[in-house]
Amino acid sequence: AKAEGKGNFQFYAGAMSDALLHKLGIEQALRHAVKADEFLLHYQPRVDTRSGELRSMEALVRWQHPERGLVPPLEFISVAEDTGLIVELGALVLEKACSQLAEWRRMGLPLKPVSVNVSPRQFNSDNLVSTLTGALARHAIPADLVELEITESCMMSDTEKVSASLAKLKAIGVRISVDDFGTGYSSLSQLQQLDVDVLKVDRSFTRNLADGEQSQAFFMTIVSMAHILDMQVVAEGVETVEQLEILQDLSCNEVQGYLISKPVPANEAEQFLRKKLLF
Ligand code: C2E
Ligand code: CA
Ligand code: CA
Ligand code: CA
Image (cartoon, rainbow, N blue to C red):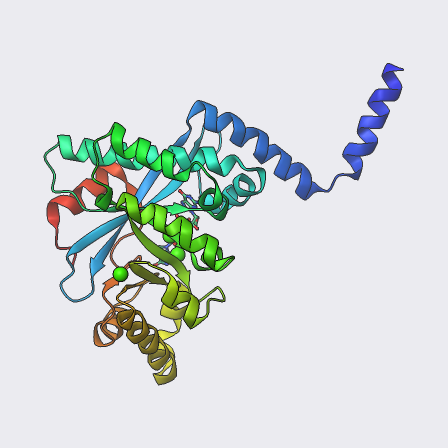
């Protein structure tokens, strides 16, 4: 009977695709990693387009795997999202961001807001509000030092439900941004109804800026629309001086990208807080 069982297992294992085995492997390792707290945050500055002044920093999670080293989020966030582990992982990220702010405060550094990415599953979970208020309270961090980045596609699912969730978060006092704007399918009326503070324009639009007038006019239209709706605009993925100069002409409020800095560990991000002017 034992041999038969083993044979069955091999049969099923053989029938599983490499992709599925890979995903199951990641899931198991992730489960362990959440318990063992193998995650850390890197920070990428967001600066004023004209003055180069530091405005805030985005926290981006990395997995410090004991054998594989630093694993980028693209390799595990979607598995975490599919398995629901993202709710726990997201709570860890919020906790770490608040605890880092508290550490910088203890060091006497002038603080700037930290933005944290919130996945769709996390946004729709009932715990987000209590997780957030818990993390803020534990580290005595004022809510306006935290911004939540919610992807455009996630915000567009069910406008009424989304508005209600946003209202609860805004009542806490955190800022809200629409992440990867331009890659989802939001309508103008949906956007008008949402009480958000910041529009982060996806880096595909930044990449096209140097192509010509049409791309620039298009970007300018997004900026005008956002300003009419009382939102600040951030260009993601700014890599060249040429892009920066175009964005200055287009009155885009803030820029983020490799031109200013890649995401860096907390001890390096500390320098941004000290320097204040990043270009
Ligand atoms: P995102 O939220 O759009 O974050 C920006 C990503 O673009 C980051 O990749 C950043 O390193 C990269 N980036 C920044 N500037 C440039 C640039 O000038 N050029 C190029 N080519 N890339 C640039 P990263 O850190 O690998 O994160 C990838 C994605 O993983 C994020 O995209 C976000 O969707 C997700 N993610 C990261 N951290 C978290 C988290 O804590 N929770 C959740 N739910 N998702 C996260
Ligand atoms: Ca983001
Ligand atoms: Ca983005
Ligand atoms: Ca507003």
